[in-house]
Length: 88
Image (cartoon, rainbow, N blue to C red; front, side, top):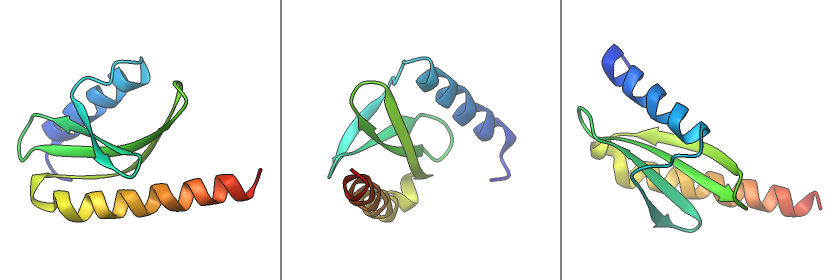
């Protein structure tokens, strides 16, 4: 990513998430959620959540790649959950 302002906006958003403020997000199915960052081309960061305190960042993208990014995030999340269940 070349846009320094976009990097800064995304980093600021992730810092707020780290403090417990998820802000604008929605479920995209299969246990995956999308953080929407209202800047530039509409950046997205995908995550899954276990309980109330653990958030796993899976991948990100922008509005143009949204459908593909959601698919990838759902696969990553499914893989993570199957590994987690196998280790218990």
